[in-house]
Amino acid sequence: MSAPRAIRKAFLAVEQSEGAGARVRRSIGTPQLRNFSPFLMLDHFSVAPGAGFPDHPHRGQETLTYILHGSVDHEDFAGNKGTINKGDLQFMTAGRGIVHAEMPHQNADGSPNVGLQLWVDLPEKLKMCEPRYRDLRAAEIPFFDSEDDKVHIKIISGESHGIDSVKELAYTPVWILDVNIKPGGKVEQPLPPTWNAFAYTLSGSTTFGSGDDATTVGAYHNVVFEQKGDVVNAAVDADAKEDGHFVLVAGLPLDQKVVQYGPFVLNTQEEVYQAMLDYQSHSGGFERAAGWHSEIGKTMAH
Image 1: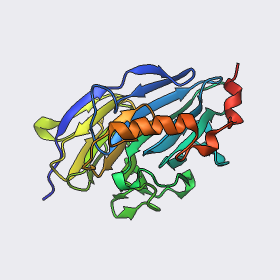
Image 2: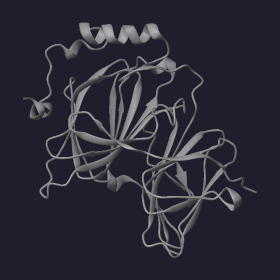
Image 3: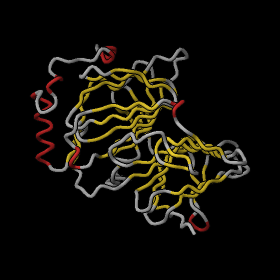
Image 4: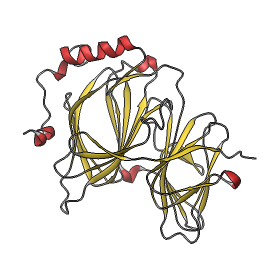
């Protein structure tokens, strides 16, 4: 018999400014939720025309970007460039070092570009690996529909109801499921035991847990689950006015220290100092940063 995971806490992600004119709701990487290995940060971003994330470095982590509305262009110092559109994902491994820009498309209706960005820690032995990108297009993502047509799950990474994701996209094992539940619908989703897991709510009201542990939350909340247990229960009240939409994410905890300074995520203070020195001196993986400026980032130049 499956054991449901209890809820450790649920909290609202408060909107704040980030980058150049962007707005983000950050939940992981705030005083509310730190040291939740392997997850370092979760931002729900909204980038209006004229805003964005111009040239900036990374070392020691992977970033997963999921576009919910609009499109985002990316470009890095190694000549990689491209666009991810609604429903697409990009998995970027920073490894020993990368400098890149992430800039929104200008939508015809003037609407902001909206998405999620999750930072995942790299195992210590992979901190200095070569940078890489993997894109996953919306059309490639397998999905599950319940028999009553009330539950739709996109299996971005991991497994749900006997359906596996397309491919492994991150070095650190992570499951990502995009779940939509219509009023009156419910789902029981198994997760790997002992993995850290959370749900981030995008719209509607969803009840997580069961029995006395059941908690109903609205949009923009992070629901953190206890490690004990092997399934997550979620349901939407039959009288609800809209669907419940959330992403359910689980990851293998890494038994290692995290020392972070902005976009540099290492295991010791000395390694962070070295990352700063390498970036400033264009060495140790940042050689190509010397004199490089992205084309897409120039739209932010004044």
